[in-house]
Length: 206
Length: 128
Image (cartoon, rainbow over all chains, first blue to last red; front, side, top):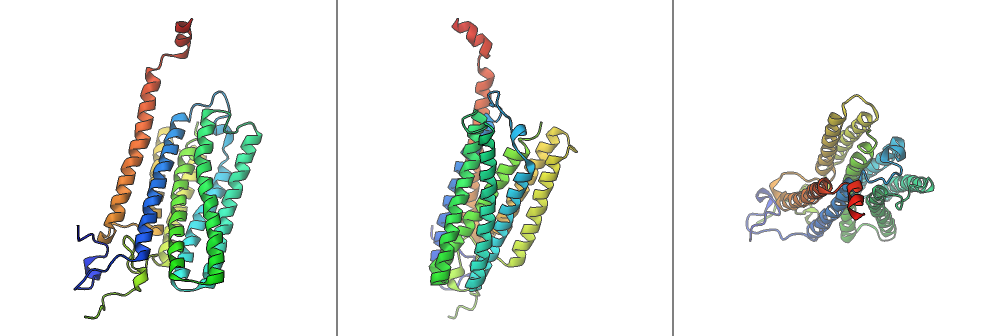
């Protein structure tokens, strides 16, 4: 168990191993958390898939979902994921001002996504298609709501990161937190791919 | 012994991520973004139009979704098959195994239960 290849052999100094860095250990731990989060989402997906047809005579996916809203939400989230990657670059190049500006863009796009989602949920509830209407809608709100909740947490996290970089600048521990955030944000985008494909795009098919 | 082989600052070397800096280079992100956006647009265009038969549309959307996830993993999360990423890949594969057990298992069990269920009208007859 001594040779867990953390760095490729060619990169290692000849005489000794590099100990795992703090960023590496934190990053890996957070990555494992994100994988467990993916398992949580898979349980919600399984629930939704089982209850998809249990509409109890209420509105179906075809009656409720609008492709335009979903498309806009997807565009917001995909672009914010890209800008988050650029923010990581800015942090690595030690450009705090650029980083703060890019984080603001990530926040704006994330907030745009959340706004669209809240409007969609409110519209559905107003039309009598709330989570209490049918098993299908309960599963829908649980799944998409769990994702929305993650996005909300992400937005709070960006806020904290913004305050941190503007008041205290870029430290090593800051970079570690930013790295974890970027992993979190990218994984939420991956979960959204599954949601818009399996819930929305396949849901509206006759 | 001088460590001339090390080209990045120590704090950026991380297990499971690119050792040339943990976050890749911006053209990588731009390429990934372009491919992901193209695949996403393809999904929406296919779903909105009735060019394909229902079964082939489902297959196409599933394939497109998997392709998008792989693009995100490679270009945004920098998961590759490099030997340095062994632990990451193993964790990811175990997660995929658990996810497929949860999803396929649930669908299978519930479909079986549904198929063996006494139809509702017969159930009402029996209760009479």
